[in-house]
Figure 1 (cartoon, rainbow, N blue to C red):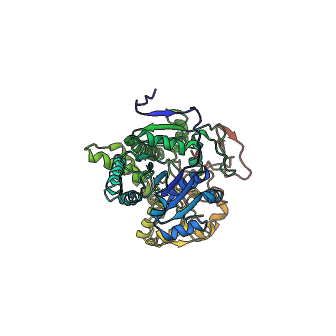
Figure 2 (figure 1 turned 90 degrees about the vertical axis):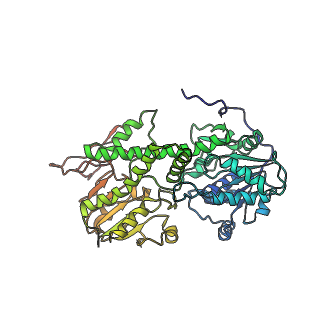
Figure 3 (figure 1 turned 120 degrees about the vertical axis):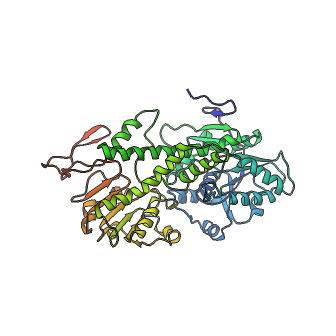
Length: 507
């Protein structure tokens, strides 16, 4: 049984926390975290000001447009528009706020440690505009242990009239998944609040009361899931809340890297990672999530946070070899894609390769640390011609990937036409539902590198490479395909490929 430390409170099923009146909230930073936080709090009934130093982004938001893609967020903004406004001016947004969120970026330094310059700039600007009443300053950005105390010192040094008992620092890490951020915001597993000041905790409880009690009316496009009651409220010390965020992301990164390492061994011994993952994921102690083998994790969190945790350990002379190994396995997965190409095409110079998917995951346009980026970069180095397609992320890639050489394709069919190989780099539903037999008709060579294991049937006449899967073998006789779905035998579809599919259960 897990023991909860004495200074940690886990609350579930407690009495409702009623809000007597909406709070005034300012959110500094309008990236993925800041936008989602601001719009969600406005939907819950609070009066919100979103603040960003980027004038163009603020003008876009004022016109009702979003600078990022997140399913449903545009509709939630429309539904909340009467309770939210946007500005570039700290002096207009900070003095009257009851709660101030800092949601700015913390990009990694070359040594893996987080760069906190944007947090420092935001904290200093906030401090200069505090008005002397009780105000809660919330670190929502992912920051190292000790940052809360550091922000408190910044407030003390830069506030015009500092009041130790009025400016309260709270750590409130986010646990949002891009692509499902609205769901995660409205129906969270837990809400973590860390502070050494009880007054700060109480105000945050009041802010989140509609979430804790689930007393709000769910939007029709993000319905409350069946069986969901309320999130766990975890109240901790300031440093513990900061550690929780890093530890959670590092554990998930470790779990994915473990699946990828086992997948590599599966290929060598003739096992199927889909079957193996299902077998171990059925164990409630392990669980099925984050056991999908593939091209490795990407995005803004796992790599950055895992490296930051290792860097924090080094500051204290403490090595973290398990986390270091997780990063090494993830790096190896990126090169595995090219190795599979070279196995079949040998020299890639002059070859035409289609890359399907550019975002690091589906249902987002976020390109940060996307496996597709490293794949395209390596193909450029080896002299291949790259044609890329993504249902959502191509406009962002035009701005952020100008250093890469590739041609845009408006459709999958255009991307694969004349290609020697196609790489599935992102598991978009559009690619899952594709008629692959028809799509591959125009290829020079029918080589498919499915790095996300989304194909459940081998396309006719194609060579299909997946991650951790058995190689397809030509059957001696035309026999129906035998497949199982959730442990139940599924009758073969008419015209099904007589060869055994190499794909297993996707978790």
